[in-house]
Length: 258
Image 1 (spheres, rainbow, N blue to C red):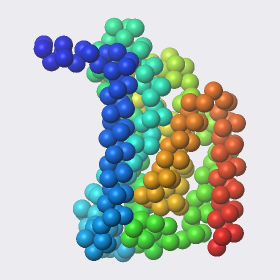
Image 2 (cartoon, helix red, strand yellow):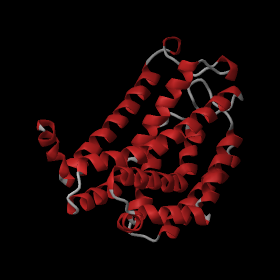
Image 3 (cartoon, one colour):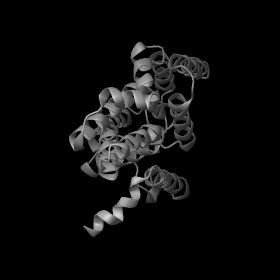
Image 4 (tube, rainbow, N blue to C red):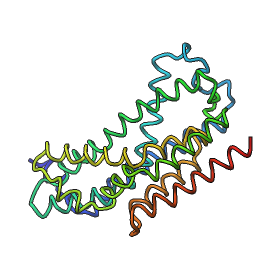
């Protein structure tokens, strides 16, 4: 029982927040390290995704998937902090094992984004094969970039986007309506929250193909946008429409710049 006593200190919201932030900073640290490697090493000594789809090997898929998985954790976990903390508070109020249930809840949430990373990996594989991405994972097709920006902009006006964003903006309401006891309940709630996040942000994640997959500025700006959408005390539809207009304007500028 000694290990239970050691983990008991993680029951407080501050400790749970500290652990969550540690995971986030570790993910961002890896991304900054990878970016530094890409910009400092000669091209001949670094790994790059093959330019032809048939030239990809298993290790290429693994490396690209790992990159996307870390990226999704770095970009999406910060926006889930309010939901995680509210969930932890409810667990403590009910005298539930907070660290165990929070871990399950967060793992299920991240698991959804890990599945989404598989789709992004397959998309990148095809884009390299079509010549739409360079070996450095930069966009080679301005029409593709404009199309992605238009897609992201239009999606911001679709009711599904606003419905999913509303769930993400109201942690207490979401958890009270979806509450289930036990480990299975924590998993189900984390899974449902992940689905809502996918429904809210999938199109924004595709923007990385438009600005360059390893574009740190793009990652940071999209992360800040997602956090603003979920945290700002503003009606969900207003935030969605504002960012939708912004994406559409960027898409127009991208087309005019061709």
